[in-house]
Amino acid sequence: MQREPGFMRDLGELILGYGLIVGVIWMPESAQRMCSPAVLVVTLAVVLARRPGRDELGIGLRGLVSSLWIFPAAAAFALVSAAVAKHFGTLHALYKGDLKHVAGYVLWTLYQQFLLNDYFMPRLGRVLGSTNLAVGMAGILFAAAHLPNLVLTVATLVWGSVSCALFLRYRNLYMLGLAQGLLGLCVAVCVPDTLHHHLRVGLGYLRYRAMR
Image (cartoon, rainbow, N blue to C red):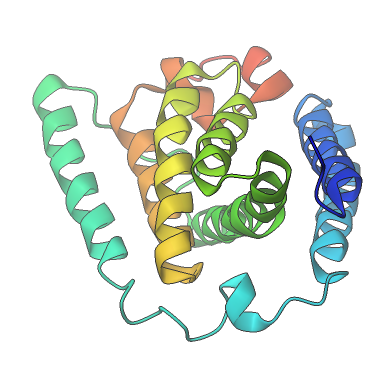
């Protein structure tokens, strides 16, 4: 079977990006603070090295208006989830619910969508030779990065694939990033902290101690 030109470059960039991300996730917190900015810069540089346009990246105006429904849909889902959680007694206040932490979390979810749809999806599509396979594999990789947090692993397996499919249709990151931020906060307040450990993943999840 003849490989497409650039196959090895795409495969190498996939291994590099995912290896860096998972490596940081499993570092102690002090090392994470030092290494995370470097990983952010490296992944951004790899994407920008191919000189993509704003619309290709999903940070332009293309698809913005037609994708606006995504955020209200996420908000409706969050409201229903909160009502169900309140009924079963699991609804609780957000850990570190001040504006600084919430805004920081939403910015992080926007960058996660950038990584998912601008870094991994195009390379997976070229390596696998199928957009559908790329969507499924992107969801699996996204979910696996949230291990051993099983709550987030299941949630991101579904959302990762759905958000990739939505990006392919609308080619816009803004509503996807905002929706992911809202859905993540929904999980944080609807599911007991003892199950999701303040949304921590990797080593941070294992080192978590439930706060009384």
